[in-house]
Structure formats: structure tokens, C-alpha cells
Amino acid sequence: MKRPRVLMADDHSLILAGLRKLVEAECDVVGAVEDGRALVEAAQRLRPDLILLDISMPLLNGLDAARQLRKLLPESKVIFLTMHASPTYATEAFQAGASGYLLKRSAASELGLAIKAVLQGQHYLTPSLTKDVLESVLKPSTGEAVKAASSSLTDRQREVLQLVAEGHGTKEIATILNVSVKTVEFHKARIMQHLDIHTTADLTKYAIAHGLTGL
Image (cartoon, rainbow, N blue to C red; front, side, top):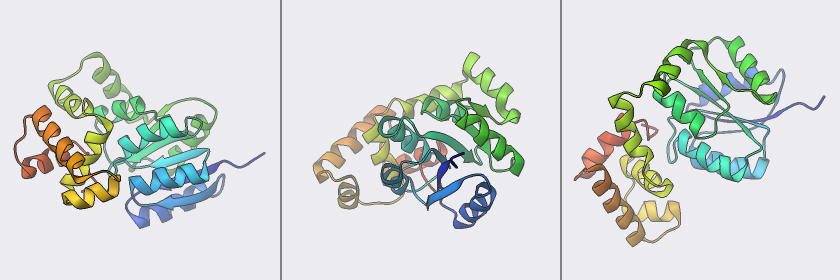
């Protein structure tokens, strides 16, 4: 039987090394990257069967990377492995196209179960979050409504917001996104208007509070 090809993404090299040891027994690890933009590029080049990724990553967070990958590589399965135990993040991960969601504190054996289930076309959610996620879907809280504000930004606006929050200047952001400086400034102004935020410092605080950065 053909071994599944796995691409991994996490901004901590030690975690990537540990993940590699866990999955190599049953899968072929075809790549490991440390930021969301590198993940999207590598996924298009390597076309893996499965992608393991974190939410908090620099340059492009895991949720937005997953949204892009759903469009670019709909055949690749996505499993989040993250420290974020909030049902809001888990719900958004599945909405972004994930097939699995695990916590980094989960037992190593659980990762194997999740990979097997996802590759068989099923979804996997770590059991400790199942009840909370159901409640989150059935009874959205005020906090989730606030989270939805960032979700209602366009893909490009979320990219600009993350890069601003991570301290990149306007010219640098324009280079990263391959757009003009005026385009970056336009998006930043629209983000501020949409979120009713008026300073770069407050934009940064907002992005960090909502898990949109690798910080």
C-alpha cells in the first residue's frame, strides 16, 4: 500500500522534529516549513496527501493558509495540531477546510488515530473539545461574535493585518504580497474602518488577541 505523503508546518523546529518522528513510521514526510507562506508554496510544489499545521505561524497564520490551500489543493487533507483549546478556533479551523483538530498536549497515539481517520475521508476532533465545539456552534457567545469581525475581513485584509501586527513596514508588506504600497495603505485603512480601530498599536493588540499572528 502506498504510504501517505505528509507536509508539516510549525514555527518551532523542535516540534517539527518531534512530529517527524511520530509520523515517519506510517507516512513519508516530504517537507517541513516554519511559516504559513512557505507552507502554501511547498504544498503547491509537493502536493502532499496530508498537511499538519499549527494556527499561530508567522507571515501567514494557519487558518488563512488553510483557506488558501482549500482552493489550491482541495484533494490534500488538513489537520491542525495546536495549543489553542478554544472551541472558536476549532470551529473556524473546520470552516477553513480542516479535516482534523488536535491539541499539542494530546497523546501521541491520538495523532495516529486522527491521521488514519482523515485519510479515510472522516473528520477528527480531539475528544476534550467535542462538547465545547457543539455548544459553540449551537449557542454562539459574545466572544465568538467579536471573533467573527476578523473573519468578515477579506483574505487580503487578514494578510495585511497579520503582517502589520508582526511589525513589517508598508514597503516590506507590499514586497511580500507583491502589490503596490498604495494597495497596502488602502487595505490598512479599510481594516481600521471595519474594526473601528485607529492606531497601528491597537491593530497589533487586536491581531494578537485573536490569534491572527505568529507572535
